[in-house]
Length: 108
Length: 121
Image 1 (cartoon, rainbow over the protein chains, first blue to last red):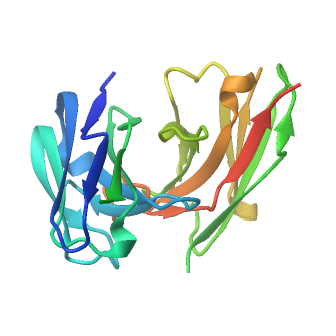
Image 2 (cartoon, rainbow over the protein chains, first blue to last red; image 1 turned 180 degrees about the horizontal axis):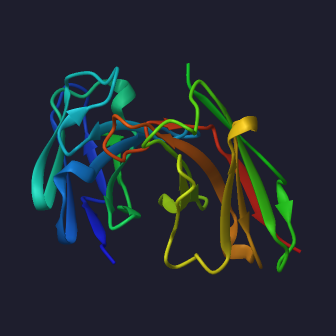
Image 3 (tube, one colour; image 1 turned 90 degrees about the vertical axis):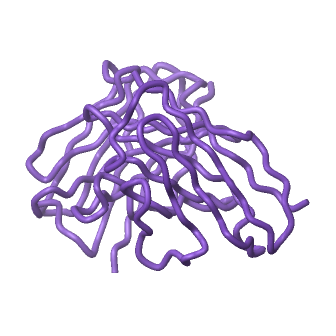
């Protein structure tokens, strides 16, 4: 069973700064089935990135995804106040979904 | 507009069976390649995928919970039902249903608001 490990656990940055969130898989996964979600407090998760680098409908272009194999990255180019939230990576392989444990992006 | 809404009990006793219903609109579960699934989140913890059902009635379950889970669909009612047997306090969580359209490469593109279920005697 694949394990997704996200780092860091918490990231403290200021609005306007660049955020880089990482997700490492315990074994190589298919990029076409790799996604990132944002979850604000008290809300349901929202799909940001699918297929490792494709933005979902309505997602601002300051969000970008990259990576392949075992290492994936979510980058937020210039943080807006509404971007401070928890971010989860997700893999879908062999008919099983796996989520990472999350990275909390907090205001410094 | 795609919407999903979870419904079910807010409190369940240990050893009982939890039954949750997802009622959706804006899509049909008879369209090729689409699916509806369930994901849960214990308070303050990460997301955990539970189960999904495809348009063709193929079902998939979390390996760690599959002996206790069952998922069914009623296309005519636009509903998906999840049952979790023999619940215990560790099953306390917010339960989300989600829709996997055919254009997001398996990602969960649409989510319900979630429903909090507490397991306690």
